[in-house]
Structures are given as structure tokens and as C-alpha cells.
Image (cartoon, rainbow, N blue to C red; front, side, top):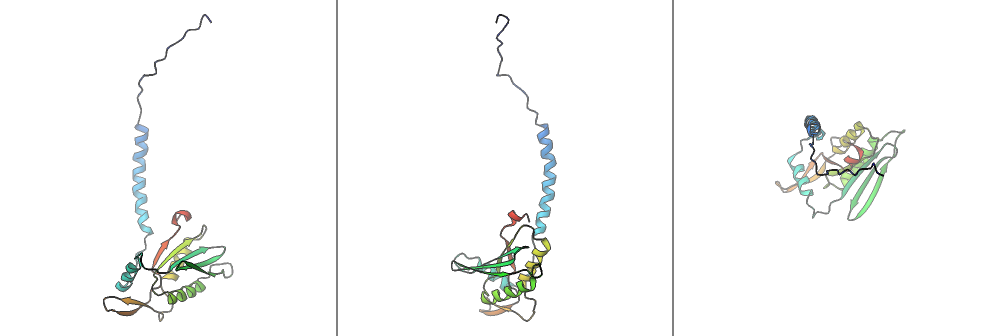
Length: 184
């Protein structure tokens, strides 16, 4: 015990913080973020719509309107499921797989029938499940956009002419409901 000395440490000492590595990392991340923001813009698909359809879509965004909500789920194992929510009630219709693959012609027929029963709805919420290929998502959007038969049209009210006119567009406004979940 005799040889033991109590040393007093000064805890108020100063030290220098080296921020150079942190700044180097930030300087390398800035160009990567700028480049990746350019690719995000490629996710938008611009389509030319007639003025009547654009106005109908804008009018449908009014929260006071009680329009039906359409949700379309895509699953490689189960096929397509279409949910229509109207006046608080949800109706489901399914399009099963055909020979183990997604049945796009049957989906198209169901969407045409749905549009005929709800001509004022132009928006569809698309919910692709994990594992659905990008090409299948694009094809689904194409099936929902217009009917295959050029003779099929749908009524829409033209406020400028104050009358009903016909349009070939079914659901041109596609909203990805789970894009963060599926990694789109």
C-alpha cells in the first residue's frame, strides 16, 4: 500500500475533433444523390388526355363527391383481385390465373364492365405484391387505360358544351398504393 500513489487526472482537457472524414463522405454522397434524383423522374408516365377527361379527373378529386374507389391487386400466386368500395361497402371480384400465368384478357373484360357500371371513375389504385414483374405491372396499366375494341366508349360530361360526350379512356389515372412496400 505504500507504493501506491493517487494520481489526479484532469478531465477538463481539450481535444481536437477531426471532421475531414465526415466531410469527405458527404462530398461523395452529394453527386450520388443528384444522379439518383434524375432517375426518379423516369418513373412518371405522361399521357395526353382530352381536355374533357382532364376536367373530369380534376372534378373527381373533390372530397365531397362520393365516388367509388377502385383498387386492383396483382399477385403472381392468386391473380388479380378488384375491390370496389362504394358508400362504405366493398365488393370484390377476382380474376384467377390461366395456365399458371396472369390472365390479362379476363382482367380487361372485368375492367371494361366495371367502367361501364361506374363511368365517372377515372382513378384506379394499383397494388402489386412482392415478386410481380415490372412488365406485368406495365401491361396491367395498359389494360386499364383503354379498351381493346376501338368501338367501346364511355360517357363523360363536358361542362363547356354542357352535354355528355364519349371517351375511349377507362382508368387513365393510376396510383401506386404500396410503392414503398414493393420497392418500385
